[in-house]
Image (cartoon, rainbow, N blue to C red; front, side, top):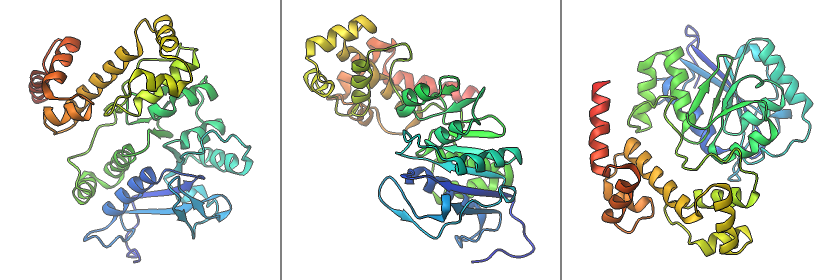
Length: 333
């Protein structure tokens, strides 16, 4: 469907898809625009408009295998308010891409704001456009980003970071929050709320909300065995693997892994795993509507009583009391 000629969109976004881009992040962002752009679910690009680009106008496959075809080559950046660089599983591929880098630099020079979506921030950093900035990255790729770009400040305690001409987003569902943020800014809060209702969300999350990551700061941990073990535990907070399984994944004995953890972190792998699960539980109490019983199960505890005992021992307060106090605190704000 076409846009009425008398209406110019208030928000114009160019989507630049990289190889193996993450479908959830791309889909969440573009669908938030689609649902806010028109009335009655007709999907006309009236109040917001977008175009999809790929280098050389080549079809691009998402990380799930879905192929997107019929895209544009690099379009004149000046026709957009933002260019969203959508990355995914190919973020470690540092093969030189001079045409892509030149395009992003040209967009920056023309004062077109860049959006780093998921690991698209890696590409923006490779183009030299993230220096002396704070960028938001998904907690799962923090180590890889810091290793490649040690001069760039990183944040994993927010959904997205707005630095003016560069906005970076953790990806996944946080891309929806970024979309709603842009819609509110350019099209008005009513348009954003329209998208919220269509997407059956509970509301618009603030960018300052933390990502759901629950690990110790490993910035100064050099032992790759510890990093690998922690990453393995992070993926399975709801079904925590026993110590022998963690050790097998890392390729060492249980005793060797325990010694390494105590030497570097001062605690055992099992203790760190329990701490991450409890932090996950606290985050869920803050951000979810599920019952304490369901949260306990989602954090890998056998029952509510076990979760409550561990939660009180770690945080000094019961889960139910913590939830009540948080609700009261929010009411006072």
